[in-house]
Amino acid sequence: PGAGMHINVADLDQKAVQGFVAKTHDMTLTGFVMDIIPKTLISPFVGDNILQVLLVAVLFGVALAMVGDAGKPVLNFFEALAKPVFKLVAIVMKVAPIGAFGAMAFTIGKFGLSSLVNLAELVAAFYLTSFIFVTVVLGVVARLCGFSVFKLCRYLKEELLLVLGTSSSESALPSLMQKMEKAGCKKSVVGLVVPTGYSFNLDGTNIYMTLAALFIAQACDVELTLGHQIMLLLVAMLSSKGAAGVTGAGFITLAATLAVVPEVPVAGMALILGVDRFMSECRSITNFIGNAVATVVVSRWENGVDMKRLNSVLDGEPVAELDPVPVAVAAKA
Image (cartoon, rainbow, N blue to C red; front, side, top):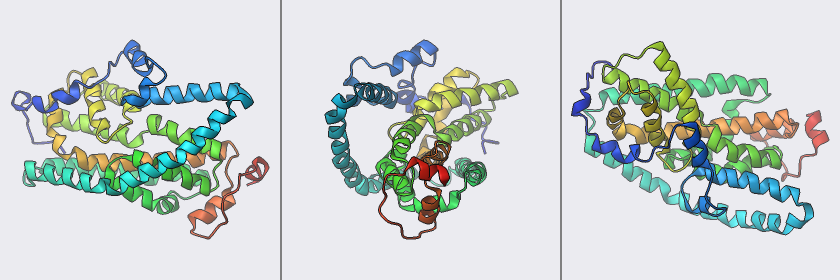
């Protein structure tokens, strides 16, 4: 899609991306480790680093399990706290699409439709790639595990529309967990796979970062060797793990990825700044579907899903309120 643009890097408005570049993380191993280790137990919850929150949550959960019955009051408190928090998120996200519409309207008004021909091709290529990934790759994985990815998407259509409107898969996290439990997946598996997947299973973000990097290189007439392309892929697979968070986090992480391959100018990010919102929607949806599929797959591996109930729910058949899935029943299914 970047062919024929012949962009001179010196002519790009580098100020437009300086704010994003300044937010990139240290890509060295030491910098990565220091970035995910919080200063205090509470500090991750007043910051914007999802990896720190995840680390504290996992360690606290392990410690809570190790103390046994003494930790039950704390566990009961967090289970009760989760309900109003999830309800609060649902209330906020009902009006979030209005803000997303305003941001998209501003982008089109500022850059104009006539200047977005190549960028429109980039967006189309990204949507097509993501569609192929969901239907072919995830479709095969789902079929091997005994369910249909298309039926799963139909079951989660309300959440997918919410993700589309907010450009963030985080908005549908509570509802996804509730629906996966309703579909027969074991609560403990859902509680581990979904939140962890939101930080470490970002399929759409990975596709976006590699495609955007290649587009910038092509638009700026930068010739990338096979070695450079493989390095971009490997770095994107690593750096995308830290792209969880608010809408647009993938764009910030892209700067960190390009910094590792100096042949691709970081200033070239200014080219895709105007259409990042459109790609943000697609990468969020792809991330969301990937996590939903992963939840069912891991539940199947752990004998923690009632496949009969799952297929009934995906087929739209009425089912009774969910009871805890007995391991023996799940294993038999």
